[in-house]
Image (cartoon, rainbow, N blue to C red; front, side):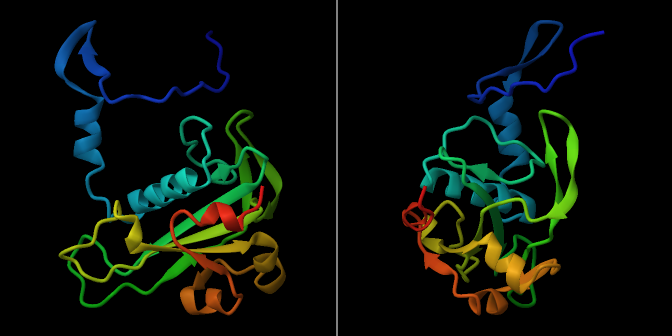
Length: 193
């Protein structure tokens, strides 16, 4: 039986070829990414993009993203960050703008190295960063244009004190807690680490 420890995931370039019994097939990982990840407005991919944007702003360089980890990002000094995203626009036909809300559910944290969940259900991070793709024109919306985003930074302890068991929060409710509102390039100034 082989070693079943966690696999160290190396960052890929996109040039890695698909093969069949060592014969390269003429398509590569970049082709797959283009096929599977081009809908940048999809709810699931937009969330990953938001994590990446925050990672870049915080200058975090800790390898590949870990799916389902207890928190989304950790700074060089150990500050744990949970990133949530929402948007007014979706890629599908809409009758009206989407209502802005964010998941803030307490959870049992999972550790990819041990494959174990924590016993206590709680919010696992030190900060929440709520990322709003605020653009409201379907012709020009582009999540890669970072001026189309607004970020709200809130210490997790504020949510724990004010909404200990709540699972979702609307933008209006969030704003009542006076989060620090910022644009790209300013998040690292708010989260001191």
